[in-house]
View 1 (tube, rainbow, N blue to C red):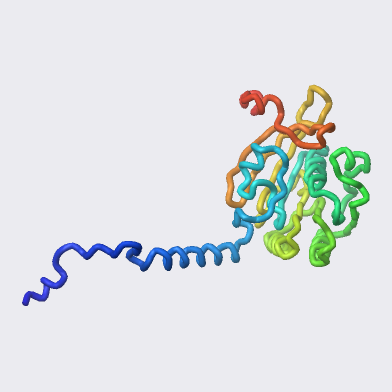
View 2 (cartoon, rainbow, N blue to C red):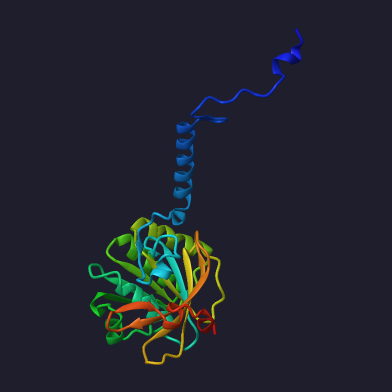
Amino acid sequence: MNPDSAISGPPPEPPPGSTADGPAPARAAHIDRIRATIRALDPGSDPGLPALPLGVPEIDGHLPWGGLALPGLHEIVGAPGDGAATAFITAILGRLGRGRPVIWSSIRRPGLYGYGLAAFGWDPADLLLARGRRPEDVLWHLEEALRSGAVGAAVGDGIVPDLTASRRLQLAAEAARTPVIILLPPAASAPQSVALTRWRVASRPSPDGRPLWNLDLQRCRGGTPASWRVGWDDEAVALSLAAEMADGSMAAAAE
């Protein structure tokens, strides 16, 4: 018998319901285990994370989580002398609802005003202000507040966490199932970070005096950068897409 005859010809077809690597159900279960392992190593990549919708369908639909992922670290930066970044944060916090206080820790005097907070749907009674002499103090405030489980969100104002500090904040946010927002100094260069999102917010001239902002999503875990122009509706106490973007005139919005 020719020894080559046993291996000549095309390979046999696999039986129905199986693959070259094994039966289809077993292979699917193996893939599920791999995905679960990846989510455990990088929880921020899970599109199933609970999220806080920003109330603008075009933005919420672009974000992988359907809104701002709650158990995670987010970074926001504004322009010098422009309070738009602070206002955007208060608009986000106003959507959290009542229940638990928010800690806002800073190494500078925060640009917060009680009536202004109320205009963005946030009760000033829910605010806990903390001051630190060094960035390390602010980071300590945030981590301890998250560990306590008593806060609904934590804001670090005027600091630039390094990569190690950002990892610690992300892990603390995941453990507490609570968002952490870092308001970066306007002049800071983009730090290395594990933050789920980074936003740049800038004021725009408004024809009716209502706040109007450019929102630039500069980075997004599991997503892509994008830009929008949004306005704040005092009557609805909500964000809305600016008229020139809502009617499709993107050229005007890009000016």
